[in-house]
Every structure is written in C-alpha cells, then in structure tokens.
Image (cartoon, rainbow, N blue to C red; front, side, top):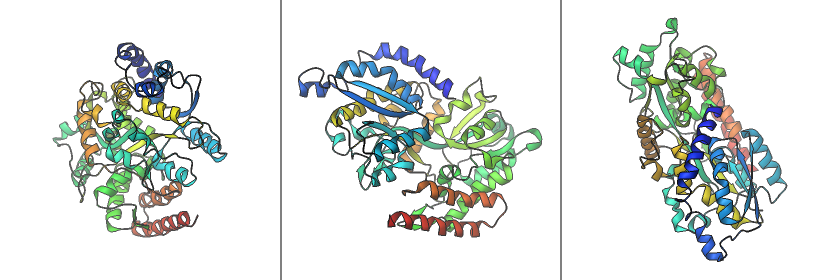
Amino acid sequence: MEKTRKALKISASAVLCISMLAACSNSGTSKSNEVAGTGKPFQNKKLTVFMANHPWVELIKSYLPEFENKTGMKVDIQSFADDQLSQKNSVQLTSKAATPDVFMIRPLQEARLYAKNDWLEPLDEYVKKDTSYDFNDFSKSAVAGTIVNNKIMAIPVISDQEVLYYRKDLLAKAGLSVPKTLDELENAIKKLHDPDNGVYGFVARGQRALLVAQASSFLFSEGGDFTKGDKAVVNSPEAIKAFKYYGGWLKNYGPPGVMNMSWPQAMGLFAQGKAAFFTDASSIYQNAIDKEKSKVADQVGYALFPAGSAGSKPYNITAWGISLNPKSTNKDGAWEFIKWATSKEMTLRTQKTGVPGVRDSVWNNPEAVSSFPPELVSVIKESKNIGVGYDRPQIVSVGEARDAIGDIVIKYIMGEDIQAAADKANKDFQAIIDKDKSK
C-alpha cells in the first residue's frame, strides 16, 4: 500500500507543484516577512524535523524547497518507521535536546506521556497569532484528541474515521439494504456468511491491543465508554453488549486465524473478496479499490458506522499530529514550519492526492475530494460531524490499558464467560489508572 500511495502522491505532487506554486506564493510566511521586513526572516536558520514514514510527509518534502526559498530557513526532515520515530523522539526529548525542533506524534497514544514529561510546547497562543491560519477550520473532534490538561499539544495532520466497508454485489444478490444499525448488520452478516464458498460474513482486527480502537465505535454507539471520570467502566452492560457484537462476529462469522489479524491482513482478506463486511479506518480505502491488488475493486461500498442503542458514534480521531519541542532554540521558525505544513493551501494539496485532511474546508471543496469515492466522502463528512475524538483510553499508560481491555474480546472469542473477563479487565484497567495517578 505504502509504495502505491507514495508513487501516486509523488506523481501528483510534481504536477501540483507546478500548477499551484504561484497560488501559494502569498501564503504561509508572508506575515512573518512583513514583520521582519527582510523578506527572509529566518535566513541562515536551520530546522530539524522528525517525521513518520507517511504519504503526507512525502508530499510535504516535495514542496519543501518552496518553503525554504520564502523563509531562508533550511529544513532537515528525517523520516522513520512509527515505533522508531517514538524511540527517536523519546531519546532526544528525555535528554532535553534542542532537536528535533518539530516532530510528529500519535496524540492519542503518546500525548499524555509526552505532556507529563514536559516534552510538548503548548500551542494555544501560537494558533492565535495569525488569523489567516484559521484554526477553527480544523475538525473539532480531531482537535479534541490533541488537547491535554486543556492545552493544545499538537496540530492535527491526519484524521481517521471508522467506517463500514461492504460488498455491493453480495448485498444486491441477497436483496439486502445497506445496514444502518448494528442489529441490521448482524442479520446481514449471518445471511452472507458462506464459508463453503469462500466468503466470511465479517472481518476486522483481531489482535488483542489493536482491536480496541476498532471496537471503540461499537462501545460508544451502545452508550458505553472506557472510563467515567477516573473509574474504569469496561464491564458495564453497555460495554458487554458492544464487545459481544465485535467478538461474537469475529468468533462466529470471521475467518480462521482472525486473532492474529491487524488491518493489513483483514483488509487483504476483504480485498480478495473473502468477506462481506469489514470495519476499519477510512484512510485505508485505497487498498480496497486498487485494481492491481483488489478482486472486488468495483464492488466496494462505504457506509456510516451502524447505529447502536445510543446512535451512530464512530471515532473521528487525529491519527497523527505535529508538535513543537519546548527546548527548541528556534521556536518561531519551528512554528512557521508547522503553520505552513498545516495551512489551508497545503491541506488542499495533500487532500487532492488522496491523503485525508483534518480541515473542514477541504471536505466542502469539490476540487479537494475529486480523488475520493463520492460515497466515502459523504460518509467521512457525516462521521466528522458526529464522531468521538478518541478510540482508546485517555490515560498515560494507554498501551497497557489496551492490552487489558482487548483481553475481554479475546477471551470471548475463545469461549470464556465475557462478564467474568470484563470484570477482571476492569479491575486491571483501574489499577493502571491508579498507577498513572500516583506517578
């Protein structure tokens, strides 16, 4: 997927770089130029930026000479795999190093830990400095995921929503409508489950920690949550019902080996035409419609996450954000880069190549969504309006908490009593919460 997306973006970037260069010549750093009165207020300054290996980053790199020419600043972007990036950030920030000046983080996974260690510069005052930046244009629920202790700790760059992928041909053949509720979806899964002919009713992530994020939309839509105040509530009746849906569908209508699956395996199975329904992030849709990889590229449908007892409440999260090192010796330059990279103009450019943006304006711009399936655009826009801004517990030790909560679904799939599993998980989760508070 990465290679294909990267190739598409680099190709698109080459065209867009030429066509939009003039259009963007008066944005980004023009305000700073006026204040400094030099034309290049950061002449001879250098900026070090740590980023993830992500299509959005490749696009930013392709436009970087434009930024450097306007500001006079040299920017060294270093890209890493996700876990390597976290390690690099931790090593540098623990030692109170001035670099990287700017770095990407996964806010829902890392922001609370980073904030607790004073590794993040609060950005509340920065976003107010230039009204043309229009921070109100960012999705509210996506921004919510970057806030810790009432402070903005990162600027959202990549958002995600949980959506329902389905096979149009299978539903049409069976005379089924697109499910709008979890009960309707369950009935459709049962009817389309046909393993003897190589089609399973449902597939999703089955790995213990990783499934928690995808099960969160089930949890919210049934009226549950991970916590209530400082108390763990993953053994509530609402949570039990939600986890029964998710775990029960994987157990009874999922493919063999589903507990070893993350999204690449689950999406791969769906793209091979071996599953009728699949729930996961909207941003991976290109894997389903890539005709070189997908046998059902022309039969993929997208639907809003089905409603539970509390309505439809899919997650709408910031998958990646970009933050400023409080120890940077060039904070103004660092913010100038963040502001440029997350500006309306750059968001439009990246969105046009298929990288989902976080600004509302791009989703209301026909030019910006022209590369997306129209049905998916409608689903994403609605999900952004009704979505929940997190998909995992909002605590420091989020990794440990995901392991504990994911165990409920795993034990249910393995045939154990789900209430007993949830009670134990809730006790373990509460101990993690209490441990975080005592540190």
